[in-house]
Amino acid sequence: MRYYSQAVWGGADVLVKRKPIARLLEPGRAEVLSATTRERLELTLGIREFASSELGLPDNRSYRSYADLGRPYAVWNVVAAPRLSLEPKTWCYPIAGCAAYRGYFNERAARRYGDRLADQGFDVRVGGVAAYSTLGWFADPVLNTFLDYADADLAALIFHELAHQVVYVKDDSSFNESFATAVEVAGVRRWLRSLGRDEELAVYEQGRERRRGLNRFLLEVRKELEALYASDDSDERKLALKAEVFRSLAGRYRRELVSTWRAAGTGDGGGQSDQGGWLSRLNNADLVSVATYNDLVPAFLGLLEASGGNFAAFYAEVERLAGLEPAERRTALDAL
Image (cartoon, rainbow, N blue to C red; front, side, top):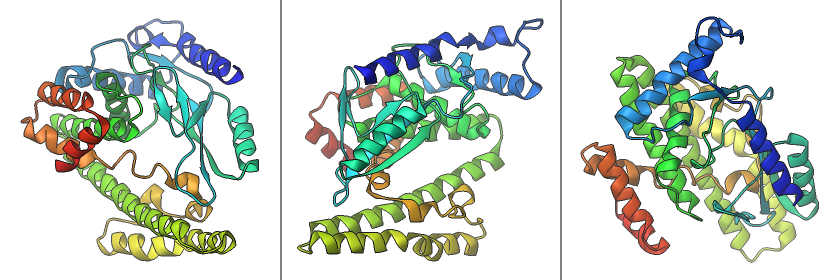
C-alpha cells in the first residue's frame, strides 16, 4: 500500500503542476519564462503538431502542457536480477501488466528499496528516468527533465511516448518498446527532413548507429555471462569469473568500439565513451533489459516500409499483430 500510495501521489503531483503551453506562451502572462524555455516550448508545440498531422499519433492533450518538477528526473526505476542469473525480477501492476522494474517518484525511497533487494542477494541498479507515460489515461505533460534535450532527442521522446498510446500489449515489453522505438526513429527522420535539417539527421543517425554498436557489444557480454551461469562451475568460481568479465568491460569497449569509431572519423562515442568508468560499474541488473528497446526494431521498420510509409496502415498491422498469441506474434515479427 505504501508503494501504490507514493505512485498515486507522485503521479498526481505531476498532473497538478501542468500548465498549457499555448497559455504560457501568451504575451503578458504572469509566469516569467526565460528566452530559452520559451524557445524550447515553442519547438515542442511544433513537434507535437507534427506527431499528429504527419505520423498519425493521437491528437489529444498529451505533451501540450508543461510541468516543472523542480528535480532532474521524473521517476527513479529499480531493476534487479539474481547474482548468477540474467532473468530479471518482475513486478506486476494493474492495467500495465508485469514489468522488469519498479518505479518511484522519490529517489530516497527507490534507493531504500534497492538496498533491501541487494541485502536479499540481488544485483541492483537504481536509475533516474526523464519521462514516463500513463499510456493515455491522463494527458502527459512535457517536463523540465527533458526539455533541454537536443532537438532530435526531444522529438524522439515525444514520438516514442505517444506511440505507446497507439498500441500497448500487456506483459510484452519487447513488443511495446521496439514498436515505440521504430515510430521514434521513423518519425525523427521524417521530421528533420521536412525541415531540411540534413546535417542534424546525419548526426542523429550516427548517434543511433553508435548506440546500436554499444547494444551489440553488451548483448555479446550477456551471452558470455549466460553461458557462465549455466556452466557446471561452483558458485564461488562463477562469481569470480563474473567479476573479471565486468572488470574487463572498459578495456574491451575501447578496443572493440571506440577505436573503430575513431578510425572511421566519427569521434569516440560522445556521451557513450567510458570517461566516467561506468562500464566497470555494471552488474547483471544493467544487462537484463539491454535488448528490450532494440530487439524487434528492424522488424517494425520493415513493416512500416512494407506499408508504403503510411503510418495509419502500419498501425493497423501492428494492432493485428498485438492481437495474436505471444508465440505467434514473435514468430511473425521474426519473419520480418
